Image 1 (cartoon, helix red, strand yellow):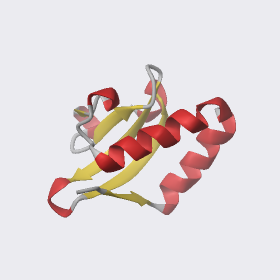
Image 2 (cartoon, rainbow, N blue to C red):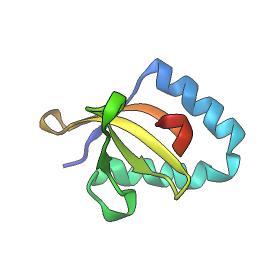
Image 3 (spheres, rainbow, N blue to C red):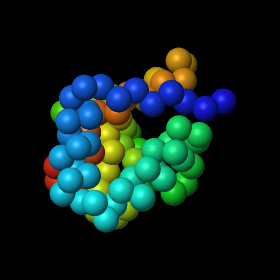
Length: 91
């Protein structure tokens, strides 16, 4: 059963800035979201829980440098997207 991706207003602003700075990642970004929607545990996403000030959030990889942070609600089949950017920007 596919998950629902929830795009908050704040995430959409971050996403617009990210894609404006990195138009070369548009295709890979959309592919990452499509895989996330179908199977959050897919190995290519490298899903992992975060710790410290980001405890309670998870992250998936767009590529080795860029990540999407998210809230993962498995019981409701929803994924709330929180941020997208480089490793240093989202952590």
